[in-house]
Figure 1: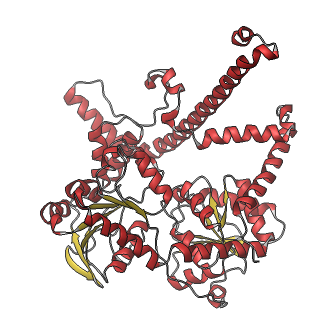
Figure 2: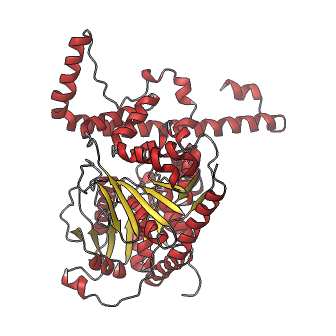
Figure 3: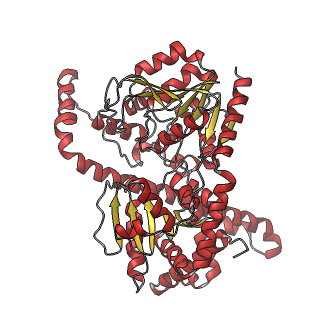
Length: 160
Length: 393
């Protein structure tokens, strides 16, 4: 075979097949009728995929708006604490860390792994919401700019 | 030049990727430079227990100075500390403590750098995450060249690294993706750097399958090479492969796992786990595989991928790892997958398009010829080291 094979082209072809099957499966399970349009489905998938790929936690607005992370962030670290005074507290913390923890570590690690997954899902959802909000705001802006010609009243858009 | 190579472990029998990279570069450069490896007495990266004798030894033309590990790693304390610092917002001293606890704890190696560091023209450090590099680079920063071998794991997000990555006089990277990753975490623009990769010797094609037959290995197989471990993405590989095997009627292909297992491998008529394999079997497996599978989510450079291409074997790789995706695209040498369904499609494609499968494998081999032969890799290293020595602060 003389000519070079483009793996990008092959990958795109394989992904298109997977996408078509996925769309078919979702419509069979009564997903939104909008998914019957392959182009629209492809756009939705691309938008969500971008959120997954580029959902850097430091580039998200929602965490800032939610306020103090202690009130909403999934806590994966286990803090060894005691409400007792310094001496007795130190003994309790030592007991928790060195005597109890070795026996329950498997349970802690199982829970922590699941919390980690939940944290990742939350971050992806934040990124998806941000992408959708940006797109929505950009469309609103565009419609406001075009409203004199299209006859749409900007205040009606803003009131929604 | 008189060069020191600082690395956490060293030896022909050490299986780690960064350690193998360090040793290979040391041997390549030893012909033209005076190389001293500064390392620990440990052979095991989990406990860092002393196994080699301390003091000076030779490894061919390379001088090796081993320093005793003062304190082995307390795994439970380290796990707790890791949870704490990776949870985010841990104070600077706790992050520093994480690097200390990660080990190996070799204070005499650091003393050697304090006392004798200036006698080396340059000091190269392998792997940012281990204590000898993290605490050693600041001691000789004017002549420090860091080979970070950074991956997109949780350690790379520690904010203490912003300052640390601004310290070395220069960098050697394994891939452009690694370079981008480290640059994105550094507080200031990086100094001079080069993407060097890893060198490979050309391989000769072989039609002899007798060694494979003597191990009862099926004619058509796809290969996974390396430690069979959850951290390497093997659990998803096994799930995806079983889904693929269940979706095709014929016994068309077997998955061969060649490497020690640290996880349970399901009993399946089309999955063969060989455990550790000797070099000759490893070469035979590579030479005849239909495809090499690399499911790892974290890599700074997949040497297995390069080895596969060196034999003209195409790859199927985890697209969620930017490095693997980048390697495959640059080489035009494999198919990336993001999900089980895409994995099955890639497997089916290679099974049904044999000419294309071979061509993609050959494209991979051509890429290795273009980029990863030792003379080219050594030249890139030499060029950067020469530049750093000339412009040293």
